[in-house]
Length: 326
Image (cartoon, rainbow, N blue to C red; front, side, top):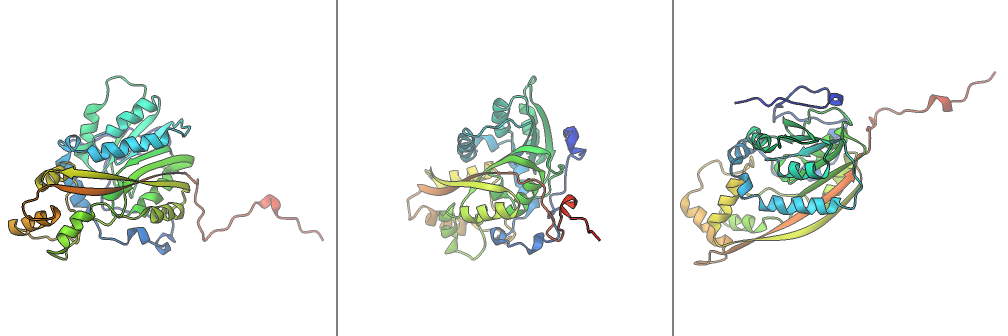
């Protein structure tokens, strides 16, 4: 396997290209004491997440229509903002479709594409134009442990990364750490009403976890503030996806690497009979093959809050301390 070489900008002082997907960090010694409502859900197997995306790299663009919808929604919501970033992080860049649009809007910015999948990044490298005013870097890393210097990024763009992470708050803490004060973090994710049809179809057949639980807009906003990011603005949109038959649905999920990677999933083979029973439940009856899925799309953006103070330390301006007079 070819190792990707990092081209991190000088302020970052990072020469690492691939980071262990198992490593996680917290910003302070009190991080574990913070409420973790957003993370109270089934856990992902990150090795399986990486493996699925590596396998889907060559087919991802043929079935990423939901990513295209949220990508368009993100840029529409960014239009009113005045942005002139020098360094941009495309967090969860996949094959680089978002990077291409970022390059078109911010022509002289240094764009860092970061993804957990080596093969996804290779696809993105193959799309790079031969000539561009923009500079590029490609990093394979876990979004919960970014190999970037504190306050080194002006703009973080993240399209549907959060549903593929094990802990959204850990991602928010890392974004808050690398984002410069006043920088912008913009993201799209799924809300709790997403893919309920699939969960209900499986619920009558077994007790295993088949669909991840996604946090709602209010919990996401609270988690952003707790992580040190400022003034979050969030809104929700709805998307209905229809299929003529369940086979096409699961083919698309496979093509984008979105099959079940939960630790609590059934580790044994499901079996054709049980799978067909689930498909019939999903299609609402015998002989009916058409299905519709509802997706709750959560959009948000917020601003970097600067360096976070360690709560165990208290600082005062020495010039404000009066001199003792005898």
